[in-house]
Length: 196
Image (tube, rainbow, N blue to C red):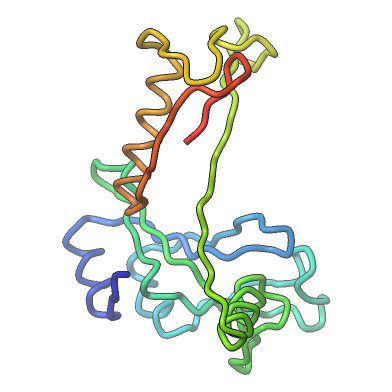
């Protein structure tokens, strides 16, 4: 795991021409939310001073207690590889806190940390191995998705170089640029179905 300081992040943002930093957090359904800031607001964010209206986030707070703060986890800083040209975009995953600085009990990240601490105290370790599966479909003449898959391949089929192979390749390379270790990618059982 990489360990960054505030100065490391400020330096990387300057040196890499990062124009936007996404401060990410999740709602109670696991949906990623974010606030995009510019480098001029980065020091404020790193001092845990960026606020948002929690009453608009499902399961967070009532309108009368809506102000929440984002506390960035410095070790989650990454520059997105799919914006390599001028004006790069980076992200920091954040913990949600109340305005008095207390960790918000409804923050899914906090809940996960609490469960992991409890599991560790019981002698358990936590390992994650995601298996992402998805389908690729053609678009119609108006650019809208159809139910027509782009291939008739099956499980582990070696398809000719085409849309599925190209899409999986781009996803794998982007994930590796983000620091993920990719075990394999291949065609799945159904037509148009893929796995990474």
